[in-house]
Length: 263
Ligand SMILES: [Zn+2]
Image (cartoon, rainbow, N blue to C red; front, top):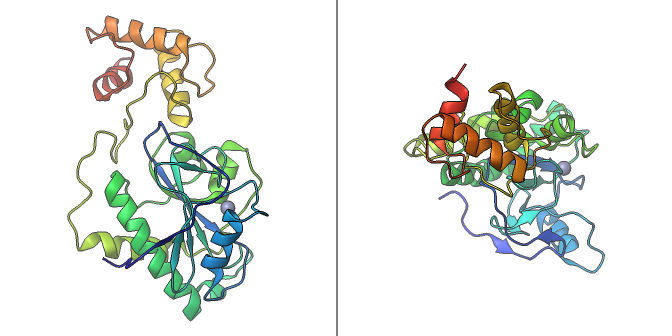
């Protein structure tokens, strides 16, 4: 595999455990210079006594990857997509121009990063597509930038990795890694919507989508606030009952299908 070895240095600030499936792989820049030790230095900063109220799963430079938060824990990198995302930090700045993203350092780093991101895409059945704001709001699964998450959910003002991040080239590298392998296997929450299993306690854009669908179909989930609470559970059970499904309140493929296909 492309990613030989990854050092682990636990970040200080993160949330232990996660209850949602991973839907989005979020690309960041560290706003730190392109140096061989940048990944190590930022990971040490995340872990140290002066750690920011932030963290990411992986810090990547041109010659190494340092993991700061386990995939099974929630890192604080892109509010709005933390609960269902993995964060990838890169050396460099969001203000970089296209030429800066094409220098030897950047190219090495993007190829290294693409190998890791391809691994995660395969592991979680996430398609190698770039998500825009509307895609995120629609609950689609894929790869995106912190800036898209900021614009979609308005919980952060960060604009990394910047307007010149080479999206097509990067996706090309990810696809090269995926290409030598079979397609991501069909996952219950894979590729085409309707995706994830949702149940009480789930949060996020997919829950909002579910709540809007329920309302359109004449069931009352309460506010479309992205929070799967008791009234949403009640509405799901009523919808399931009306479609002759097991009224367990858990939204799996059958329930999504019933909700999306009923007029
Ligand atoms: Zn960021």
